[in-house]
Length: 172
Image 1 (cartoon, helix red, strand yellow):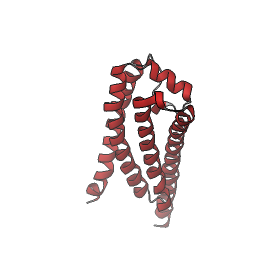
Image 2: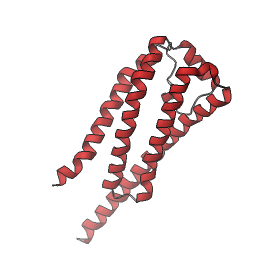
Image 3: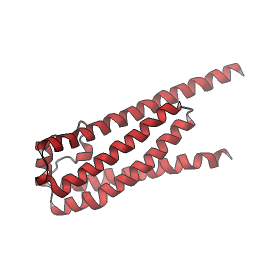
Image 4: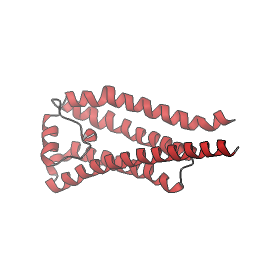
């Protein structure tokens, strides 16, 4: 019975790992090669500014732009659903307070917003102001911050879970 309860956690974790692998091994390196080695927006942990975005988009080939728009972004959207399910189920399994469940959801919203900003940049950078692009860069930076918040929530929950299990064993 317990194995069936863990199946959604295992499947969402495995799907997240496979999708991350596809992006990290195939898609993102191919896009970066098509941009003369410049880093993709998704990988700019602290965000980016107008000049960074301009340099990337000017270097990005038409094929790289198509790969980013029609492969990387759709895969990333499926990935954000998979990792959100995984993180929520992991927090639930670790008996985390329900308030911590907001972190994976906030991360997913930030990641989806980042994907939308990236699509806008890829489709119409020339029409955007430097202020708008700077905001887009901040969205990426905030997504990174939320990712770290989720990892901290998982670590805290895992430590609390282990301590509670230990306490229960001593009481038994």
